[in-house]
Length: 610
Ligand code: M6R
Image 1 (cartoon, helix red, strand yellow):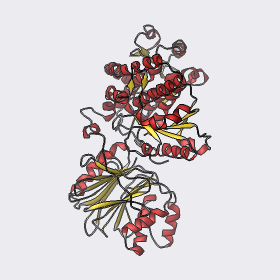
Image 2: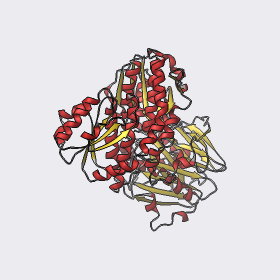
Image 3: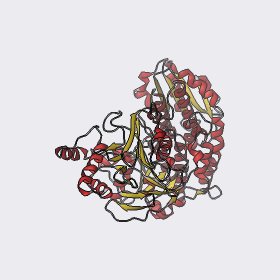
Image 4: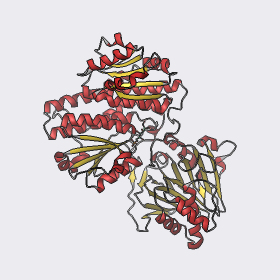
């Protein structure tokens, strides 16, 4: 979603801001803008479109000044156009603001300002905040106090950076509900919504907390609450390397991330699997061991791909630990007055750790007294910080908007978590050992599937012109059908639906004809014969069957038009392997259709608004 970069130091700000915005492009946006403070005035260039469009007919690098801000906007209030793009200024044109989040009471504030004679150019909630700060400055005469006063009246979420000609040695950043990180360099500071925009300049960062602000000058900074109480502002180190956020020779981040999975999956169990003991060590959960051993119910909450991982987790935990599990869309959870008991454990799964709906769900669960855990990828993210305990999935930075490696890493953690809970209860060491051994073999199996990518590409090319796809699976692989369909629609814009295979006859079967490709996830497991019958039903109606099948399944090619084989593994681990060809299928279809795979239209990598 929106990206923020701000710079104060002794170097020219605009090249640093532009390169930072480019690093944030993956998050998804529809307009961009830069403002540099010259001692006399604000120099602004903003436009609908991409960062590259800012440079059309305008020498951005020629903007001179060592203090500035830049923004990529994902439209919420008002269409993506030049006027609605950030930065926004106050009415005098002396204060510039960039904003992520939503000011919920902006209409009330706007009305107050209009009554006082202030005018607006854009339709955005963000401009209202800029003009409000300007109005307060007119009476207070101090920028920091004006920002704090404005924020104390604001309802909603914000990550803001404010600069002004009134004080060209001052940058103010503040957050509530939208991430902001202050990079601490030598005599320079970079503030950004994502560490990716900072790492090229410094690894030393302060993750601003809720309702915290940073008041930054070239000579130093203070962090404080927006109520003006000083805070400690602990400096931490960025946990990834620069090359992890570069394409490394791949045409797209998504393909790079698909190919990284043998490594990222291994990183998810490294140091955790205890094959000999048939157990798992999850250090991040030690402080909630007691609550986990007595938990009567587990609620997993998440969105999108992470929600699909949660569904697999439900099957795993119920099977191995025999604890009832409920999986909730985070966006629905808090609005339905959920029943939560003190001995319930609520788990949030999130790649970004910043998804607004998931964050709101865990806050709701905490308020109601549950133990709240996180399974998160981004280190230091809001969900990681606000949960009682958790496990990092260690997938490394995921840049492609379509989640791939994070999904398999989430499954890696969920499987280990289910073993961990199971071993606290009735699960035998032998059973634990078999699963641990199975997990340890997965990275090689993933590589075996990746080695078939050329034949998957050929299948994809045959179907890239269709309008609809159906994905069917059962048991552990029903969520994989949902995930396969989501991947395809996100990046290729082909309509796709995932269904439990047996549900087909209750409706979707009406759609089947010779133009309908149906992807079956049909590994050799206890329900294979049932899925096989569903395949026959599709074939009897001339549907085109693409089967994801076990390597020892010699009969499947009789029934399917195309078969993609996955190596043998335990049934509960097949979702991990089956998801790899589905990622590749979606990727190759989208590439063949000429789609922008890494930045699909309308989507954002991290959905930080409700
Ligand atoms: O960062 P999160 O895992 O919380 O994000 C949740 C969803 O927004 C995300 O999975 C989304 O569905 C992706 N675009 C899936 O590819």
